[in-house]
Image (cartoon, rainbow, N blue to C red):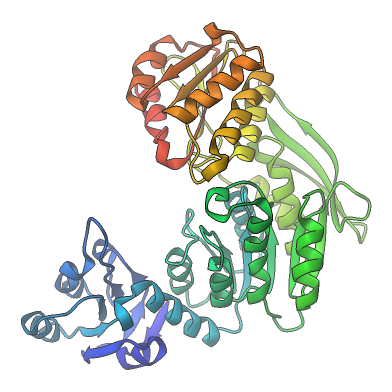
Length: 479
Protein backbone atom coordinates (compact mmCIF):
# COMPACT_ATOMS: atom_id res chain seq x y z
CA UNK A 1 0.00 0.00 0.00
CA UNK A 2 1.03 3.61 -0.53
CA UNK A 3 1.28 6.00 2.40
CA UNK A 4 2.32 9.36 0.93
CA UNK A 5 1.15 12.93 0.65
CA UNK A 6 0.39 14.49 -2.71
CA UNK A 7 3.46 16.71 -2.43
CA UNK A 8 5.71 13.73 -1.69
CA UNK A 9 4.28 11.86 -4.68
CA UNK A 10 4.91 14.89 -6.88
CA UNK A 11 8.49 15.12 -5.66
CA UNK A 12 9.08 11.41 -6.33
CA UNK A 13 7.66 11.44 -9.84
CA UNK A 14 8.18 14.92 -11.25
CA UNK A 15 4.42 15.46 -11.47
CA UNK A 16 2.94 18.95 -11.10
CA UNK A 17 0.81 19.60 -8.02
CA UNK A 18 -2.30 21.36 -9.31
CA UNK A 19 -4.31 21.21 -6.09
CA UNK A 20 -3.03 20.09 -2.65
CA UNK A 21 -6.21 18.45 -1.34
CA UNK A 22 -6.71 17.60 2.31
CA UNK A 23 -5.79 13.89 2.56
CA UNK A 24 -2.86 11.58 2.05
CA UNK A 25 -2.88 8.42 -0.01
CA UNK A 26 -3.35 5.37 2.22
CA UNK A 27 -4.24 2.64 -0.23
CA UNK A 28 -3.51 1.21 -3.67
CA UNK A 29 -2.77 2.83 -6.99
CA UNK A 30 -5.55 2.06 -9.49
CA UNK A 31 -6.07 2.89 -13.16
CA UNK A 32 -9.76 1.93 -13.28
CA UNK A 33 -12.09 4.38 -11.51
CA UNK A 34 -14.43 1.49 -10.71
CA UNK A 35 -11.75 0.01 -8.45
CA UNK A 36 -11.15 3.15 -6.41
CA UNK A 37 -11.43 2.74 -2.67
CA UNK A 38 -11.00 5.03 0.30
CA UNK A 39 -7.55 6.61 0.20
CA UNK A 40 -6.68 5.36 -3.29
CA UNK A 41 -4.38 6.98 -5.83
CA UNK A 42 -6.21 7.13 -9.17
CA UNK A 43 -3.98 7.42 -12.26
CA UNK A 44 -5.86 8.57 -15.35
CA UNK A 45 -4.47 6.94 -18.47
CA UNK A 46 -5.78 8.40 -21.73
CA UNK A 47 -6.62 5.10 -23.43
CA UNK A 48 -7.71 4.51 -26.99
CA UNK A 49 -11.28 3.62 -25.98
CA UNK A 50 -11.62 5.13 -22.50
CA UNK A 51 -10.02 8.34 -21.27
CA UNK A 52 -9.39 8.15 -17.54
CA UNK A 53 -9.28 11.94 -17.39
CA UNK A 54 -13.06 11.90 -17.80
CA UNK A 55 -13.38 10.07 -14.47
CA UNK A 56 -11.34 12.24 -12.09
CA UNK A 57 -14.38 13.48 -10.19
CA UNK A 58 -15.94 10.01 -10.09
CA UNK A 59 -12.73 8.68 -8.57
CA UNK A 60 -12.71 11.46 -5.98
CA UNK A 61 -16.31 10.77 -5.04
CA UNK A 62 -15.44 7.09 -4.62
CA UNK A 63 -12.77 7.97 -2.08
CA UNK A 64 -9.58 8.71 -4.01
CA UNK A 65 -7.23 10.90 -1.99
CA UNK A 66 -5.16 11.89 -5.03
CA UNK A 67 -5.91 11.80 -8.74
CA UNK A 68 -3.25 12.01 -11.44
CA UNK A 69 -4.28 13.62 -14.72
CA UNK A 70 -2.63 13.12 -18.10
CA UNK A 71 -4.31 16.11 -19.74
CA UNK A 72 -5.24 19.67 -18.85
CA UNK A 73 -7.69 19.94 -15.95
CA UNK A 74 -10.06 22.87 -16.32
CA UNK A 75 -10.84 25.33 -13.50
CA UNK A 76 -14.34 23.98 -12.93
CA UNK A 77 -13.03 20.42 -12.60
CA UNK A 78 -10.27 21.59 -10.25
CA UNK A 79 -12.82 23.39 -8.09
CA UNK A 80 -15.02 20.29 -7.88
CA UNK A 81 -12.09 18.10 -6.93
CA UNK A 82 -10.95 20.61 -4.30
CA UNK A 83 -14.45 20.62 -2.82
CA UNK A 84 -14.15 16.86 -2.41
CA UNK A 85 -10.80 17.24 -0.62
CA UNK A 86 -8.99 15.41 -3.41
CA UNK A 87 -5.48 16.45 -4.45
CA UNK A 88 -4.77 16.76 -8.17
CA UNK A 89 -1.46 16.02 -9.89
CA UNK A 90 -0.58 16.17 -13.56
CA UNK A 91 1.94 13.56 -14.71
CA UNK A 92 5.15 14.95 -16.16
CA UNK A 93 4.83 14.88 -19.93
CA UNK A 94 1.33 13.43 -19.39
CA UNK A 95 3.12 10.06 -19.19
CA UNK A 96 1.24 7.96 -16.64
CA UNK A 97 3.37 4.88 -17.30
CA UNK A 98 6.53 6.75 -16.35
CA UNK A 99 4.70 8.25 -13.36
CA UNK A 100 3.89 4.76 -12.02
CA UNK A 101 7.41 3.48 -12.60
CA UNK A 102 9.00 6.42 -10.76
CA UNK A 103 6.56 6.11 -7.87
CA UNK A 104 7.22 2.38 -7.63
CA UNK A 105 10.96 2.96 -7.52
CA UNK A 106 10.50 5.32 -4.58
CA UNK A 107 8.19 2.93 -2.71
CA UNK A 108 10.55 0.00 -3.37
CA UNK A 109 13.48 1.98 -1.97
CA UNK A 110 11.46 2.69 1.16
CA UNK A 111 10.88 -1.05 1.64
CA UNK A 112 14.38 -2.46 1.68
CA UNK A 113 13.10 -5.23 3.95
CA UNK A 114 11.13 -6.82 1.11
CA UNK A 115 12.64 -9.94 -0.42
CA UNK A 116 11.75 -9.58 -4.09
CA UNK A 117 11.75 -12.64 -6.35
CA UNK A 118 11.66 -11.98 -10.11
CA UNK A 119 10.46 -14.36 -12.83
CA UNK A 120 10.89 -13.94 -16.57
CA UNK A 121 11.19 -16.18 -19.65
CA UNK A 122 9.44 -16.92 -22.91
CA UNK A 123 6.97 -19.49 -21.56
CA UNK A 124 6.23 -20.84 -18.10
CA UNK A 125 6.52 -17.48 -16.31
CA UNK A 126 3.07 -17.57 -14.79
CA UNK A 127 3.26 -21.21 -13.67
CA UNK A 128 6.65 -20.60 -12.06
CA UNK A 129 5.36 -17.42 -10.43
CA UNK A 130 2.36 -19.26 -8.99
CA UNK A 131 4.61 -22.04 -7.66
CA UNK A 132 6.86 -19.46 -6.02
CA UNK A 133 3.88 -17.63 -4.54
CA UNK A 134 2.56 -20.87 -3.08
CA UNK A 135 5.94 -22.03 -1.77
CA UNK A 136 6.93 -18.72 -0.19
CA UNK A 137 3.38 -17.97 0.90
CA UNK A 138 3.26 -21.12 3.02
CA UNK A 139 6.11 -19.73 5.13
CA UNK A 140 6.24 -15.95 4.72
CA UNK A 141 3.73 -13.15 4.14
CA UNK A 142 3.88 -13.10 0.34
CA UNK A 143 2.42 -10.81 -2.30
CA UNK A 144 2.55 -11.86 -5.97
CA UNK A 145 1.68 -10.59 -9.42
CA UNK A 146 -2.03 -11.13 -10.09
CA UNK A 147 -2.73 -12.91 -13.38
CA UNK A 148 -0.16 -11.65 -15.85
CA UNK A 149 0.11 -8.02 -14.74
CA UNK A 150 3.76 -8.18 -15.73
CA UNK A 151 4.41 -5.20 -17.99
CA UNK A 152 5.46 -1.57 -17.46
CA UNK A 153 2.06 -0.82 -15.96
CA UNK A 154 1.20 -4.15 -14.36
CA UNK A 155 4.40 -4.55 -12.36
CA UNK A 156 4.09 -1.11 -10.69
CA UNK A 157 0.48 -1.88 -9.80
CA UNK A 158 1.67 -5.16 -8.27
CA UNK A 159 4.33 -3.55 -6.12
CA UNK A 160 2.17 -0.59 -5.11
CA UNK A 161 -0.61 -2.93 -3.93
CA UNK A 162 1.66 -4.93 -1.61
CA UNK A 163 0.17 -5.15 1.90
CA UNK A 164 1.89 -3.24 4.67
CA UNK A 165 3.01 -6.47 6.35
CA UNK A 166 4.39 -8.13 3.20
CA UNK A 167 7.74 -9.88 3.55
CA UNK A 168 8.16 -11.38 0.07
CA UNK A 169 7.12 -10.02 -3.33
CA UNK A 170 7.01 -12.44 -6.27
CA UNK A 171 7.06 -10.36 -9.45
CA UNK A 172 6.54 -11.61 -12.99
CA UNK A 173 8.44 -9.57 -15.59
CA UNK A 174 7.20 -9.63 -19.18
CA UNK A 175 8.26 -7.66 -22.22
CA UNK A 176 7.62 -6.86 -25.85
CA UNK A 177 10.77 -4.87 -26.62
CA UNK A 178 14.40 -4.71 -25.60
CA UNK A 179 15.00 -2.57 -22.53
CA UNK A 180 11.68 -3.27 -20.85
CA UNK A 181 12.86 -6.03 -18.50
CA UNK A 182 15.83 -3.88 -17.52
CA UNK A 183 13.47 -1.10 -16.48
CA UNK A 184 11.17 -3.50 -14.64
CA UNK A 185 14.04 -5.15 -12.79
CA UNK A 186 15.54 -1.81 -11.78
CA UNK A 187 12.12 -0.84 -10.49
CA UNK A 188 11.42 -3.90 -8.32
CA UNK A 189 15.07 -4.85 -7.54
CA UNK A 190 14.91 -8.66 -7.10
CA UNK A 191 17.51 -10.48 -5.02
CA UNK A 192 16.42 -13.86 -6.41
CA UNK A 193 15.33 -14.43 -9.98
CA UNK A 194 14.93 -17.06 -12.66
CA UNK A 195 14.66 -17.21 -16.44
CA UNK A 196 12.37 -20.08 -17.36
CA UNK A 197 13.59 -20.46 -20.96
CA UNK A 198 14.36 -18.62 -24.20
CA UNK A 199 11.80 -19.38 -26.88
CA UNK A 200 10.40 -17.64 -29.94
CA UNK A 201 7.77 -15.43 -28.30
CA UNK A 202 8.23 -11.86 -29.62
CA UNK A 203 10.76 -12.99 -32.23
CA UNK A 204 8.87 -10.79 -34.69
CA UNK A 205 9.75 -7.78 -32.55
CA UNK A 206 13.28 -8.75 -31.50
CA UNK A 207 14.49 -10.53 -34.63
CA UNK A 208 16.27 -13.59 -33.22
CA UNK A 209 16.38 -15.93 -30.24
CA UNK A 210 19.75 -14.47 -29.27
CA UNK A 211 18.14 -11.06 -29.02
CA UNK A 212 15.35 -12.58 -26.94
CA UNK A 213 17.99 -14.12 -24.65
CA UNK A 214 19.64 -10.72 -24.31
CA UNK A 215 16.30 -9.15 -23.42
CA UNK A 216 15.56 -11.80 -20.78
CA UNK A 217 19.08 -11.42 -19.36
CA UNK A 218 18.33 -7.75 -18.68
CA UNK A 219 16.84 -8.92 -15.37
CA UNK A 220 20.42 -9.20 -14.09
CA UNK A 221 20.92 -5.44 -14.27
CA UNK A 222 18.27 -4.77 -11.64
CA UNK A 223 19.26 -7.46 -9.15
CA UNK A 224 20.73 -6.59 -5.79
CA UNK A 225 21.56 -8.36 -2.54
CA UNK A 226 19.03 -8.70 0.27
CA UNK A 227 20.97 -8.65 3.50
CA UNK A 228 23.41 -11.54 3.26
CA UNK A 229 21.39 -13.19 0.48
CA UNK A 230 22.03 -13.17 -3.24
CA UNK A 231 21.77 -12.03 -5.83
CA UNK A 232 21.13 -15.43 -7.44
CA UNK A 233 19.78 -16.21 -10.92
CA UNK A 234 18.36 -19.72 -11.50
CA UNK A 235 18.56 -21.21 -15.00
CA UNK A 236 17.59 -24.54 -16.56
CA UNK A 237 20.88 -26.22 -17.49
CA UNK A 238 19.42 -27.84 -20.61
CA UNK A 239 18.43 -24.47 -22.06
CA UNK A 240 20.60 -23.74 -25.09
CA UNK A 241 21.13 -20.12 -23.98
CA UNK A 242 22.03 -20.93 -20.36
CA UNK A 243 25.84 -20.53 -20.86
CA UNK A 244 25.22 -17.37 -22.92
CA UNK A 245 23.23 -15.78 -20.08
CA UNK A 246 25.31 -17.15 -17.22
CA UNK A 247 28.74 -16.27 -18.62
CA UNK A 248 27.84 -13.19 -20.63
CA UNK A 249 25.52 -11.40 -18.21
CA UNK A 250 25.03 -12.88 -14.74
CA UNK A 251 28.51 -13.75 -13.53
CA UNK A 252 30.16 -10.54 -14.88
CA UNK A 253 27.54 -8.60 -12.90
CA UNK A 254 28.38 -10.47 -9.70
CA UNK A 255 25.17 -12.50 -9.82
CA UNK A 256 25.57 -16.15 -8.78
CA UNK A 257 24.05 -18.74 -11.10
CA UNK A 258 22.18 -21.81 -9.87
CA UNK A 259 21.38 -24.39 -12.54
CA UNK A 260 18.53 -26.89 -12.38
CA UNK A 261 17.81 -29.89 -14.56
CA UNK A 262 18.59 -33.57 -14.72
CA UNK A 263 22.38 -33.60 -14.42
CA UNK A 264 24.33 -34.58 -11.29
CA UNK A 265 26.03 -31.18 -11.49
CA UNK A 266 22.76 -29.27 -11.18
CA UNK A 267 21.99 -27.64 -7.85
CA UNK A 268 18.40 -28.90 -8.03
CA UNK A 269 17.60 -31.87 -10.22
CA UNK A 270 14.77 -34.15 -11.28
CA UNK A 271 15.63 -37.74 -10.35
CA UNK A 272 12.40 -39.48 -11.37
CA UNK A 273 9.24 -38.53 -13.23
CA UNK A 274 6.04 -40.41 -14.06
CA UNK A 275 2.73 -39.30 -15.56
CA UNK A 276 -0.66 -40.59 -14.43
CA UNK A 277 -3.69 -41.11 -16.69
CA UNK A 278 -4.58 -37.44 -16.37
CA UNK A 279 -1.12 -36.38 -17.51
CA UNK A 280 -0.09 -35.09 -14.08
CA UNK A 281 3.53 -35.60 -13.12
CA UNK A 282 4.80 -37.17 -9.93
CA UNK A 283 8.35 -35.92 -9.52
CA UNK A 284 11.19 -36.86 -7.21
CA UNK A 285 13.60 -33.96 -6.81
CA UNK A 286 16.89 -33.64 -4.97
CA UNK A 287 19.32 -30.90 -4.07
CA UNK A 288 23.09 -30.79 -3.96
CA UNK A 289 23.08 -30.83 -0.14
CA UNK A 290 21.46 -34.27 -0.08
CA UNK A 291 17.83 -33.24 0.51
CA UNK A 292 15.16 -34.94 -1.61
CA UNK A 293 11.39 -34.96 -1.84
CA UNK A 294 8.49 -36.11 -4.01
CA UNK A 295 5.54 -34.08 -5.26
CA UNK A 296 2.51 -34.64 -7.50
CA UNK A 297 2.02 -31.53 -9.61
CA UNK A 298 -1.53 -30.17 -9.84
CA UNK A 299 -1.33 -29.34 -13.55
CA UNK A 300 -0.79 -31.81 -16.43
CA UNK A 301 2.31 -32.14 -18.55
CA UNK A 302 6.08 -32.44 -18.33
CA UNK A 303 6.80 -28.76 -18.94
CA UNK A 304 5.93 -27.64 -15.37
CA UNK A 305 8.71 -29.87 -14.00
CA UNK A 306 11.36 -27.32 -14.98
CA UNK A 307 9.21 -24.60 -13.41
CA UNK A 308 9.13 -26.65 -10.20
CA UNK A 309 12.92 -27.04 -10.16
CA UNK A 310 13.44 -23.29 -10.63
CA UNK A 311 10.99 -22.45 -7.85
CA UNK A 312 12.62 -24.93 -5.50
CA UNK A 313 16.09 -23.55 -6.21
CA UNK A 314 14.97 -20.09 -5.13
CA UNK A 315 13.13 -21.41 -2.08
CA UNK A 316 16.33 -23.19 -1.02
CA UNK A 317 18.46 -20.07 -1.59
CA UNK A 318 16.02 -18.09 0.54
CA UNK A 319 16.63 -20.52 3.40
CA UNK A 320 13.06 -21.79 3.56
CA UNK A 321 11.70 -25.28 4.21
CA UNK A 322 11.67 -27.28 0.96
CA UNK A 323 9.27 -29.93 2.26
CA UNK A 324 6.75 -27.23 3.14
CA UNK A 325 7.30 -25.70 -0.30
CA UNK A 326 6.54 -28.98 -2.08
CA UNK A 327 3.40 -29.50 0.00
CA UNK A 328 2.19 -25.99 -0.88
CA UNK A 329 2.87 -26.47 -4.59
CA UNK A 330 0.96 -29.76 -4.55
CA UNK A 331 -2.08 -27.92 -3.13
CA UNK A 332 -2.00 -25.13 -5.73
CA UNK A 333 -5.30 -24.44 -7.50
CA UNK A 334 -5.34 -24.85 -11.27
CA UNK A 335 -5.06 -21.55 -13.13
CA UNK A 336 -7.91 -20.63 -15.45
CA UNK A 337 -7.30 -21.06 -19.19
CA UNK A 338 -3.94 -22.72 -18.52
CA UNK A 339 -4.35 -26.49 -19.08
CA UNK A 340 -7.57 -26.21 -17.12
CA UNK A 341 -9.68 -29.36 -17.65
CA UNK A 342 -13.50 -29.14 -17.90
CA UNK A 343 -16.19 -31.65 -18.76
CA UNK A 344 -18.66 -30.46 -21.41
CA UNK A 345 -22.38 -31.46 -21.36
CA UNK A 346 -21.54 -33.79 -24.25
CA UNK A 347 -19.20 -35.72 -21.96
CA UNK A 348 -16.07 -34.55 -23.78
CA UNK A 349 -13.20 -33.33 -21.62
CA UNK A 350 -11.90 -29.92 -22.68
CA UNK A 351 -8.34 -28.85 -21.87
CA UNK A 352 -8.60 -25.07 -21.83
CA UNK A 353 -5.13 -23.65 -22.56
CA UNK A 354 -6.47 -20.66 -24.47
CA UNK A 355 -4.81 -17.93 -22.43
CA UNK A 356 -1.78 -17.55 -24.69
CA UNK A 357 0.54 -19.48 -26.98
CA UNK A 358 4.01 -19.69 -28.47
CA UNK A 359 5.51 -22.48 -30.57
CA UNK A 360 7.15 -24.14 -27.56
CA UNK A 361 4.01 -24.00 -25.44
CA UNK A 362 1.93 -25.29 -28.35
CA UNK A 363 4.20 -28.34 -28.52
CA UNK A 364 4.06 -28.80 -24.76
CA UNK A 365 0.26 -28.66 -24.75
CA UNK A 366 0.08 -31.18 -27.60
CA UNK A 367 2.28 -33.44 -25.48
CA UNK A 368 -0.30 -33.13 -22.69
CA UNK A 369 -3.09 -34.05 -25.11
CA UNK A 370 -1.15 -37.15 -26.15
CA UNK A 371 -0.28 -38.18 -22.58
CA UNK A 372 -3.72 -38.03 -20.95
CA UNK A 373 -6.11 -40.99 -20.91
CA UNK A 374 -8.71 -40.88 -23.66
CA UNK A 375 -11.54 -43.30 -24.46
CA UNK A 376 -12.61 -41.40 -27.59
CA UNK A 377 -10.87 -39.06 -30.03
CA UNK A 378 -7.96 -36.75 -29.33
CA UNK A 379 -8.94 -33.37 -30.80
CA UNK A 380 -6.64 -30.35 -31.08
CA UNK A 381 -8.35 -27.00 -31.67
CA UNK A 382 -5.53 -24.59 -32.48
CA UNK A 383 -5.54 -20.93 -33.38
CA UNK A 384 -2.85 -18.60 -34.62
CA UNK A 385 0.10 -17.26 -32.63
CA UNK A 386 1.07 -13.60 -32.58
CA UNK A 387 4.27 -11.54 -32.59
CA UNK A 388 6.34 -13.98 -34.66
CA UNK A 389 7.14 -11.55 -37.47
CA UNK A 390 8.93 -12.97 -40.50
CA UNK A 391 9.17 -16.32 -38.72
CA UNK A 392 5.41 -16.69 -38.42
CA UNK A 393 4.82 -18.93 -41.44
CA UNK A 394 7.69 -21.27 -40.63
CA UNK A 395 6.83 -21.57 -36.94
CA UNK A 396 3.14 -22.17 -37.60
CA UNK A 397 4.21 -24.88 -40.01
CA UNK A 398 6.25 -26.52 -37.25
CA UNK A 399 3.19 -26.56 -34.99
CA UNK A 400 1.03 -28.17 -37.66
CA UNK A 401 3.70 -30.79 -38.31
CA UNK A 402 4.07 -31.49 -34.60
CA UNK A 403 0.32 -31.92 -34.18
CA UNK A 404 0.34 -34.48 -37.00
CA UNK A 405 3.31 -36.29 -35.46
CA UNK A 406 1.47 -36.57 -32.13
CA UNK A 407 -1.25 -38.57 -33.87
CA UNK A 408 -4.30 -36.42 -33.18
CA UNK A 409 -7.57 -37.82 -34.48
CA UNK A 410 -8.94 -34.42 -35.44
CA UNK A 411 -6.97 -31.21 -35.99
CA UNK A 412 -9.17 -28.11 -36.01
CA UNK A 413 -7.36 -24.99 -37.22
CA UNK A 414 -9.01 -21.62 -36.69
CA UNK A 415 -7.86 -18.42 -38.37
CA UNK A 416 -6.53 -17.16 -41.68
CA UNK A 417 -3.30 -17.66 -43.66
CA UNK A 418 -1.26 -18.87 -40.69
CA UNK A 419 -3.86 -21.53 -39.94
CA UNK A 420 -3.42 -22.60 -43.57
CA UNK A 421 0.31 -23.01 -42.89
CA UNK A 422 -0.44 -25.36 -40.00
CA UNK A 423 -2.87 -27.34 -42.14
CA UNK A 424 -0.44 -27.72 -45.03
CA UNK A 425 2.36 -28.86 -42.75
CA UNK A 426 0.06 -31.39 -41.08
CA UNK A 427 -0.83 -32.80 -44.52
CA UNK A 428 2.84 -32.99 -45.44
CA UNK A 429 3.47 -35.02 -42.29
CA UNK A 430 0.81 -37.50 -43.39
CA UNK A 431 -2.28 -36.42 -41.48
CA UNK A 432 -5.25 -37.29 -43.67
CA UNK A 433 -7.52 -34.63 -45.12
CA UNK A 434 -10.44 -36.16 -43.21
CA UNK A 435 -8.63 -35.44 -39.94
CA UNK A 436 -8.13 -31.72 -40.69
CA UNK A 437 -10.86 -29.10 -40.30
CA UNK A 438 -10.11 -25.52 -41.42
CA UNK A 439 -12.44 -22.87 -39.99
CA UNK A 440 -12.32 -19.14 -40.37
CA UNK A 441 -13.71 -17.96 -37.05
CA UNK A 442 -14.29 -18.97 -33.46
CA UNK A 443 -18.05 -18.74 -33.99
CA UNK A 444 -17.83 -21.15 -36.91
CA UNK A 445 -15.71 -23.52 -34.82
CA UNK A 446 -18.35 -23.60 -32.06
CA UNK A 447 -21.10 -24.18 -34.63
CA UNK A 448 -19.27 -26.93 -36.57
CA UNK A 449 -17.20 -28.70 -33.90
CA UNK A 450 -19.39 -28.33 -30.83
CA UNK A 451 -22.16 -30.71 -31.99
CA UNK A 452 -19.76 -33.51 -33.01
CA UNK A 453 -17.93 -33.78 -29.69
CA UNK A 454 -19.03 -36.76 -27.63
CA UNK A 455 -18.34 -38.62 -24.40
CA UNK A 456 -14.78 -39.90 -24.21
CA UNK A 457 -13.32 -37.21 -26.49
CA UNK A 458 -10.36 -35.23 -25.19
CA UNK A 459 -10.13 -31.71 -26.66
CA UNK A 460 -7.16 -29.34 -26.42
CA UNK A 461 -7.89 -25.64 -27.07
CA UNK A 462 -4.77 -23.52 -27.59
CA UNK A 463 -3.89 -20.20 -29.29
CA UNK A 464 -2.56 -16.74 -28.64
CA UNK A 465 -4.90 -14.61 -26.58
CA UNK A 466 -5.87 -12.46 -29.56
CA UNK A 467 -7.34 -15.50 -31.32
CA UNK A 468 -10.17 -15.55 -28.78
CA UNK A 469 -10.42 -19.34 -28.48
CA UNK A 470 -11.62 -18.94 -24.88
CA UNK A 471 -14.96 -18.18 -26.55
CA UNK A 472 -14.81 -21.63 -28.16
CA UNK A 473 -14.38 -23.18 -24.72
CA UNK A 474 -17.33 -21.23 -23.34
CA UNK A 475 -19.44 -22.18 -26.34
CA UNK A 476 -18.68 -25.89 -26.05
CA UNK A 477 -19.23 -25.93 -22.29
CA UNK A 478 -22.57 -24.18 -22.72
CA UNK A 479 -23.99 -26.70 -25.22
